Each structure stands twice: as structure tokens, then as C-alpha cells.
Image 1 (tube, rainbow, N blue to C red):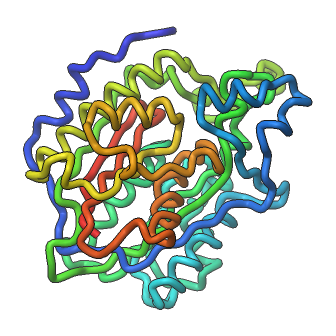
Image 2: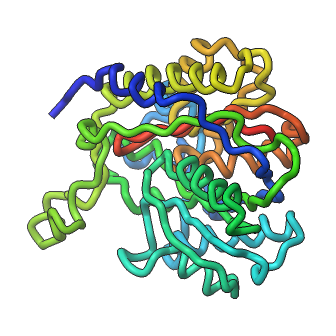
Length: 344
């Protein structure tokens, strides 16, 4: 069913007033992508046009996990790099949150498997807000720190999207890749943290981007597998229109709530879904193009891994400095969205 998501619900989510979580900072970052690179040219054998993929999406290549790799493996490598960057041991963690829509298994949580492998005593749980998942988890983790009940929170975004896509679906198969990113959060005495943030959801658009089979509503059977219900389905046109409008509205509201102007934003890191969505949303905001970080061309859409992977690469490339104002925005299945102005 194709429905038109009204702007009313996006605006409603932006009205509760100023929300901020300061006194929290990023102590370290890390990321990981599988070794196997799948270039557009490699998809020609399946009948795909490499130039068409690039022009429509901005993607040149994506990573694919090995058969023996699971989401917790990608999360582990990203987490280890993050902890090494922060010079913090796993034993010092109080909480681990893993944002993912592709858990290793329905239960236990991927975060618990990561906790075990790290050798950490931390509490651990998963969050599933699809491509908005990292932002939801980041905001949640910061609140545990703000209340003072925890001192070190590891937030990981990780997804194996190659396990969710149907090779026979020409509209979705070239878009997605596998990857993970992590940030370690700690307390700060200054004004670091989220100067403003917004969270939103519109469940009436859930069928626009979903995996219908495999849950309690529709358990997998030989019949559902034959119907390929275990794979993602997407109404690309509707999702595109919704994403551009939502990103534009939510980012503008978030910058205003932080009492900043677009020129005050040092770097914009959006969920890396489609270059046309990124370009349209940023043009509406009015931030110079040179302040936009994009690695979509090399990784494709890694869902919850997208923003933290980009953050780690931007930091290591010297694009992020202490005191910078970063505008982050995630959007995806649910439908969900989340944005924040993060002072580094």
C-alpha cells in the first residue's frame, strides 16, 4: 500500500520544546567494514548498470561480510578500535548499547554477545530503530551519563544489510552494504554534548520499508520463504520524498533549537542512504557543500552503522575538532527519524 506521509506528524514531533543533553562528550571512536569490496562493475553479471547505480544513488561500491561473519563480529572490531582510541579497557564500561536491525539471532541481544566477547561486566541491550538506530542509541546513552548513574557508555551501530536484501529486487539490492561504527561516551564539565535533539516516529508508514517475514506476525515457513518474504521491501519513491522532507524540516528545527545558524555548523553527517537525499536536504538547510561528510560512495547504506562509521572516518581525516558543532541526522524504517547538534 503506497501512502503519503503527511508533514503534520514531522512538525508535531518538533514541537515539544528545546531538548538538550550537555555535560557529555565523545571519548573515542572506531569503525569496521568487512574486507570484501563489491563494486558496481561486479554487479554487471546480475544485469545491473554500474553508471545507473552511481547516478541514481552516488554509490560506487559497498562491503559484504564473509559467510562466517555476523553483526556482533563487526560490532566487536569497531568497539575494540573505539576503546583503544579512548585508552579505556572493557572492564571500565558501565553500559553497552548496540543499535541494529540485523541481530545475530532473535535472542539474546547482540549487545550481550558483544559484552561477552569484550570481557566487559557492563549492562547491555539492543535498540532497533533501523537507520535511525545509532541516533536513538546515542541519545539514550547520553541520558544515562547525564543522570550520573553511569560513567562510561559504549554505543555501537552495526548492521549486515547484505543478509536482508533480495538479489532479484533491482531497486534495493545495489543500495546496501555491511559495516559498523562505535563511540565511547563519558561525562564532561563543559558545554560538550547535544545542544539540541529531536526524535520522531510515524508507524503509519511502516509498510513503506520493512521485512515482512520472520517475526511473530509472520513466522518463516516454506511458503513464506518461497514468496521471498524474508527480504526487505521498499517503496522507493515514497521513502525518498519522505526522507528529503523530514530531514530538511528536522535539521532546520534542530539547528534553531540550538540557537545556531546554518553557518555555525562545522560538519554535517547524515545517514548515508542516497546522495540525492543528502544533497536535497543540505541544500534546503543552507550549509556549504564542503561541510558535508560523505562516504556513501565506498560503503553504501549500512543502516545503523552509517553515522558512526562516517563519524570515525571524519575524525581520523581531521574533519572534526574539539568545540566543533556537528549536525547529525538519521532516518529510516519505522518510519523513524532523529537529529541532533553535537558539540564535540
